Image (cartoon, rainbow, N blue to C red; front, top):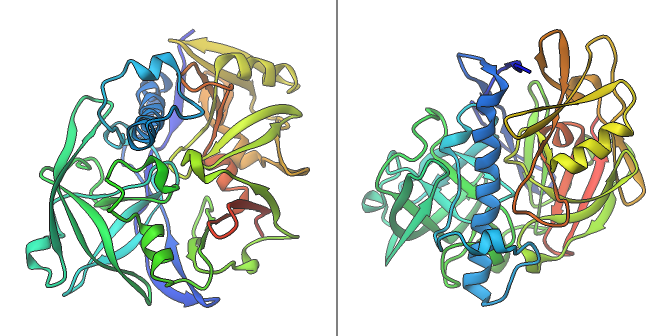
Amino acid sequence: MQLGIKFFAAVAAFTSLVSAHEGVAINVDRRRSLEPVNDIRKLKGVFQAILHKYESGILSYKRRTGKDHIWQTPKINKRSDVASIDMQDISHETQWIGEICLGKPSTCVLAHFDTGSADFIIVKDPYDPDKSNTSVNTKKTFSQGYADHSKAEGKIYTDTFSIGDIHANNLSIGVSKKNFLQSFEENKAVAGLSFPSIKSFDDGHLTLMEAFKRQHKLKKNLFQFTLKSGKGSTLNFGDIDSSKFCDDLTWVDVNPIWGFYIVGGRINGQKAITAIDSGTTFIMGSRKKLKELIKKTPGVSYLEDDGMGYGAFDCDITPNVTISYGGTDFKLSREHVSRGTAGKKCLLSIVGMDSGLPLDTWIMGDPFFETTSIVFDHDHNRLGFAPQK
């Protein structure tokens, strides 16, 4: 069947910085693109790009450790040994961005903060390391592959950086020779926030969280995403802002060895291995798992188109989708359970696409992030979840 979707792509638009809770809070937002995507099949490239990002991290882990990642599969093993972080193909999706300042004199840019990758990569403008008194040319280069077969490549520098009033040194910055983020007028960089085992740069190069942690710059080595559909989205570094959520945080352990934030949970009672990813607009699983989920979700029927699986339902109902971690349930509201339309039907914000990721992995994106406040605790290797206020 022909699937149409009224979906507005989004990229974050502005940030301002304030100090709070002995840490720092970045106010983040997202900018709607001018044109909606009217055919949901066009989003297949978006989903493929997200999976390429995970394949990139898995390849980086293999190259760095000499061992197979827990998600290693023959399909991924056969890919060329080129790191891949896909942003070009997600020009019709949401990217949450905040301000980070680099070098001296300071140049402030808007960066997409991504929990599904580790490296800091920036376009050649406006940051010019030759104009910074504190930059160091490492004499090393990088090359990042993209889903559209283009590349971001250039030199790796180190420089000072700041987020709000927190200043640190030796952030490794990959400066691309070409504008690999040309679809994002506001966004100038990608700031990876995953564990360092999946970074594509060498061990001597520090990620953002490694720099903060080694230099003891934060009260607590953690950050907290509280993303909202409207205004008021924040990314806190250094301390937990309890004013952002109700009840207590539910803590779930995460293994830093694997780089990604992989935790076990349930979706409508169905066991799920999940990756918590701020760089994904939908919740994504395999078609098999989506079919199983829909069977347990009254009022929703399963549709397929071009190798993608979708859930369709009458727009006057709100399907029950409950995501559970550590025994705590988080129910998606009407606003977050639906994303787009197919004819006169509404579509779930959960999609199915077969991938190289094993264990029937789910990638948890915006619908879950906009329901909860999530703490990524690097001191205790755990994630904390609580309902947003």
